[in-house]
Each structure stands twice: as C-alpha cells, then as structure tokens.
Amino acid sequence: MGNISAFSGRNVLTHVKKDDIIHKDLSSLISSKGLDSDALNKASIMTSLFNSGRAIGNYEKEVNFTNNLDKYQGQIKNEIKRGFKYSKINNETKVNFDHSIYKNDKL
Image (tube, rainbow, N blue to C red; front, side):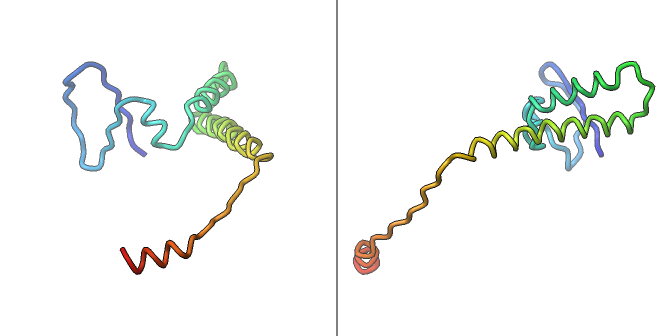
C-alpha cells in the first residue's frame, strides 16, 4: 500500500522514487485502476451516510466502502449485460479463394 500526494500549481518540486506512478489528474488515476468515477462517487456518498455519527474503526469503514463500490460497479456490468440481451451478432466470414490464390501467385 502506498501514499497519494496531490499538488497544485506549476513547477512543484517533490521527491519521486523509481517505481512511482505520476498521474495528470484524479480522473486518470481512477481510470488507471479500472474504476468508474460515478460508481466511486455513489459509493463514497453511501459510505459517508452509513458511517455518519458512528464510532467505528478504519477497517470497518474500508469494508463498508468496498461493499458499496462493488455494488455500484456491479450495476454497470448488469446494465451492459442487459443492453446486449436483445442484440443479434452476425458473424459471417467470407473468404475469396480466387483472390487468395492470385495474391500468393502474383504479389
């Protein structure tokens, strides 16, 4: 597990290690992790509402967030599956053997 640092302004100096990854902005970080920003926002809001006013530890907060994120990420997968449910895939491959023979002999 590592750290995340955010800097604003131009020409900011910082220490960078050999294997550090630098992202241009938060959206590039989120997309590099394979997350959906909308699902991430919904999970953050739901976790915040669930945790508000409760005295719980960091581990339980992390588990709640992970469960909420999995739920909203799963919604996206289900919507994609539902979108393809009534689609028809036409997979026809036609090979022109005359052209293949001509290409191999002449070209």
